[in-house]
Each structure stands twice: as structure tokens, then as C-alpha cells.
Image (cartoon, rainbow, N blue to C red; front, side, top):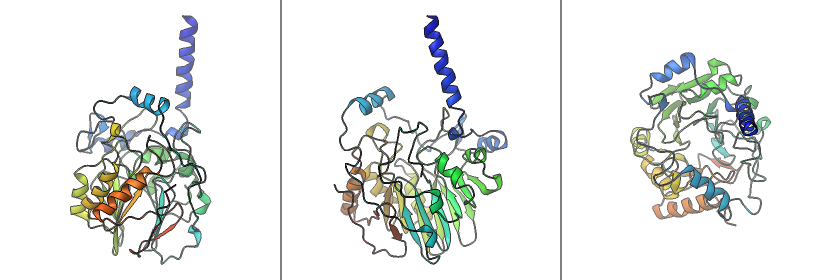
Length: 362
């Protein structure tokens, strides 16, 4: 009995010490926490979605999910060969070009009207605080911090590890002019050495006015959390608006009526960037199913749809290329043009006729 309790004590101590690593960030406190408490979306000590959003759908359990994931067969979860990639030189872009370059999963760079944007960059090759547990597909990590120019606006949708990567964020620190994130997320950035005056934390339905550029922080249906904390920081989607275009940056979300509302208020959009992977019926409230991705683009009144959140990490049990195959199929049925570049390919935002191959077919 003494040995049993001794082992348990050592495990608890080891776990506690591991959670002190900087990768886990820091929970909001002080003035930041007081501001959070003023948000109408913060109730009983945590942020809430606009509608009931369980972490797991009715009839499912975490024990069942773990058993399914680790003890049942799920063919083709990872590509059998290197998926095609290329590398655009971001340091030599024509400043007059309006372009987007995707890095796999939900990370991408945009240059719009001479301004540079970076969204949810994860360049470390790992989407988990446990080293080697959620590794990027071989060959998909084509970019490193040194490949990036100065970033005018770093947009963070929420603080999950596959969207807020400690190693990448620390590496980019001297290149980022302004961080835009949800309420509370700035606590991580300050802990990681960012100056408070470069961090802007917003609630849903707020607008940052930079003259010819407006960034609207809009609703998403998801959740947040690092370490043992959950929903103590806010998750966002974004509307990036310039005099010549509007782009919807979806982050992670489940399907809901907020999409049509955003479309009515801010649409139509030239491009909607929506998460299309890592879905499962067990968590259908927090991630789009493929048909919902296309319906969301329709609700948003988007001229083109770019599906992301796939092709780099396996966080769900579906085949790695199923999200793109299914979204492409539904988009054809609904006559919604899709933007499906390979990793590193330059998307010309002024060219609605640019064509892309179905590169995910093995």
C-alpha cells in the first residue's frame, strides 16, 4: 500500500512539474481577468457558445473515443506517400500582389493591399504539448520562422495547440507588429515575451479600425483551453475587410446560425476560409462535417471557399484526404467554387479563375 501511494504521489508531482513548462502558457489574471468578466459571453467562470455546445455529442464518452482511436482500425489516417508541396519565397513577394499561401492545417499567410497577415501558424511539426505525439505528415513542414517577412497582423483564432504553437510564436516574436486574439489569449503572449502594447484582445462582434483596413472579430462555435484549463479564453472567427475585398477567417467552428448572421452583416465575401477536417459524429457540434463546410460558405455568401484544417495532422479517425474529397464533391453539387492549393502554393486573390488540381487523390 505504501509503495502504491508513493508511486501515485510521484506521478502527481511529475505531472504538476510538467504542467509548469512554458508551452502551456498562462491563464488570464488581474486586469485581464476583470475585463473578461465583463463579457456577456463569460458566465459562471467560463466562456460559453451562443447555443448549447457539448464537448462530446449525446451518446458518446471520452473512454469510448480513446478505445475507438487506439484499439480499432482506421485505414489511411496518414498519407501513404509524400503529399505534393512547393515553396513560395515570401521574402521576395511583389508588394503589389494580393496572395495567400497555405502551410497545411489552419496556418496561412496573406498579403493584402500591401499588409501582411499570418493566421494560426504552427511550424514546429507538432500539434500537441507531448513531443512526438501529433507529428506533422512527413514533408509538410516546408516553412520555418526565417522564411517570413515582418508580419503586420498575427491573427489567432483560439489557444489550442494546433492553432497556437509555442515554438512558432516565440520564434516570430521580433517579426510581429500586432497580435489580434480573443479575450484572455493575450496572457499566453505576454508570458512568452510579447510586449503588452502589441497585443489586442477582442470579444465577439467588435471591430478594429486601421483606416483602409478593418478587422472584425466575429463568433465561432468551438471551445478553448491549454493545460487543465477549459474555456477561460475566447475563440474567434475574423472578417478581414479592405476597400477592395472581404475575407472570412473561420478558425474552428461547428455549424450554427451565426454563419448566416455574419453573412448578412458582413457579406458577401470574396473568400471564406473554413475548417474542413478532424470531424467526427462524436464531436459534430464543434467541427463542420464536409457538407456543412459548403453550406457555411453559402450562408456566408462567399464567392469562393477555401477548406483548411486538414492535410498535415491526424486529429480524428477519418482518412487523411477524405475532408478534401468530400468537400470537393459537395461543392460541385452546390456550385460553390473551391480553392484547394497544395502546401506552399501561391493563391492569387485577384484571380477568381485560378485553377487547382485534385492533388489529394492517391
